[in-house]
Length: 221
Image (cartoon, rainbow, N blue to C red; front, top):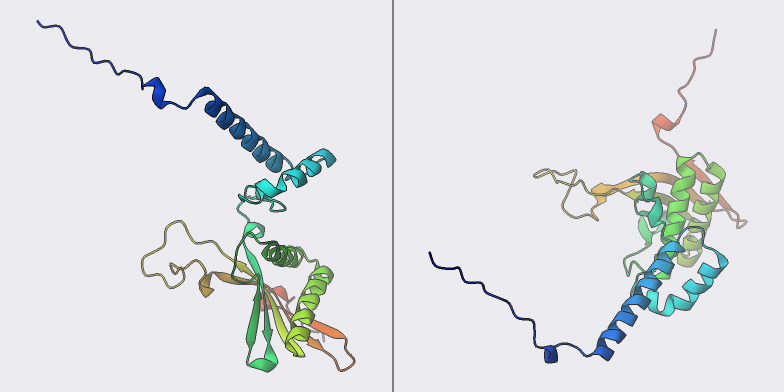
């Protein structure tokens, strides 16, 4: 019986490895990166004054490589409708039903888009929780701004939720197209007619569905 051969894998040539100064610099940069990441993530929820100062100090680096969640509430994601993307659609009735949608297409990390996204999410939040006055105030402000900018006096303001696609798309399903931005995935959360009176005041009337209205009670004879 012959003895088995043992093959040993020799270590790499020490001359091919980075030198001690290079390894020290890489380790230091890695520690700094992890520190920045831990700081911005820990400051996302109820940050202390020290954390806020650190976040602002590290902002040139953390926002450059998009690791700062900023005001995005990633820790509150619970797979509920409030977590989905929302948008505002202002349709100008006097211009052939032309729509102005925001946030519009563009870089998802831009401050402008985040502000519009936060506005739409806030309006949807009030609409789902019977905060009628607050929802009407936001819808009236959005409609007024677009009407003044476009020179119109009547509009329909819609707050719309973009439903997520199902994990597995049924074959040839018209209700679940492969395009995640398709119209079929949009759901109206709040709809209102907004117009500017001749005196300059802005009026709003919310549209409601049949299931949102109390059934009529016949009068007793």
